[in-house]
Image (cartoon, rainbow, N blue to C red; front, side, top):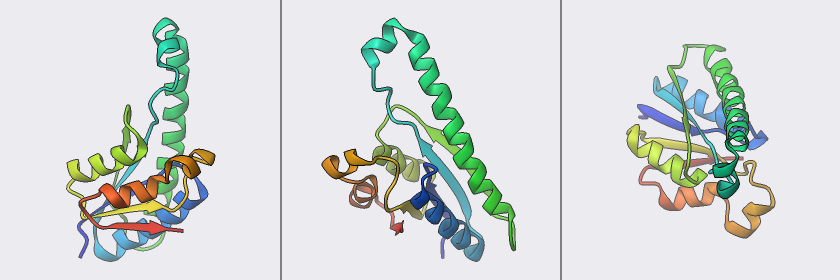
Length: 146
């Protein structure tokens, strides 16, 4: 049924549950899995323009977090039964929900899997969760994992 599943990962506990679900679905359906990590836009743009070291440190930390999240997905893909074909991607300079929806369109995914709660903490309560925005904006089905 599914040929290409897009997994939104940020390394959070809910993301780990979504990862397990997405890997299991990909294995069951023989689908390709794309794991996407979205880097939030640099929050101190004016400061970063005058101090590029701040921006570089921010991006280095983001790349480390993305690599860890992708490594967890890769580990699950190689465990168990049939191997799962995995593509790891990182998206920058967009909000998390926009990056996930854009990547789903670019990759022609037929399912998006997201965790119900990510790393957004208190901002999620004020701005609305990433998962709910993805559900509202996505043109393909979205599976929200707890």
